[in-house]
Amino acid sequence: MFLNERGVDRKMGLEDASRFESFDLNDILMKNNRINIIVSKE
Amino acid sequence: MAVDWGLISACLSSVKSSLDLGKFILLKNRKIEDALKQKEILEEIKRKENNGNIFLIQGYGNSIYMGDLSKIPKEQKSNLLDNYSYSRERIGQQKEINIIDLDFYPRVEKFERSQHNDRKINQISTFLEPDLRNILRLAIYVKELYDEGNHQEAALVKSDLVCLS
Figure 1 (tube, chains in turn purple, orange):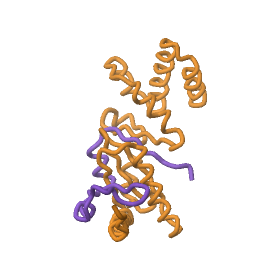
Figure 2 (cartoon, rainbow over the protein chains, first blue to last red):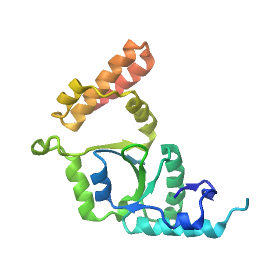
Figure 3 (tube, rainbow over the protein chains, first blue to last red):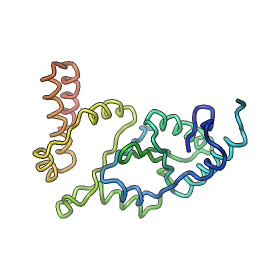
């Protein structure tokens, strides 16, 4: 799943778009021993 | 090829729904610059609703996850904090978590690319608190930059080190 400046990757069909993967924070922590959290100052 | 606004709208809506549920979206094999563009789009949508705080997590390899800080369940935030806080009792079991300001990220990325796995250093750094560990890694980096003749960059990183210590 990827959006470009104008919206959706042209190579991607609607079916692919509806099947993007989502995770919760605990899943991410379990899968990765090292993570960088990138935040904005705002 | 015409832009399919229906498709765009459907995708944005499903991404937004996942973020609102406190989930992260995995952006597979994307560079951080691409992920930032995507983050900007969703931030703009969220801004219109006057809520949301989109941020990115960079994991192993090229995996980049995007989430909304304001929607993440409290217990998951506590778990993150538990891993982030240094604990002598849990040395070697905790995850390495770095919080990086977006403006500072390009310099961090450059530093990360320069890092090589040094077993001797790793043996020591495991026992250091995260801040001290970073100071050690940066100090080694400064020396390497000086050794390579890159004095300007070395001085810049050295000034960051002074701020840290």
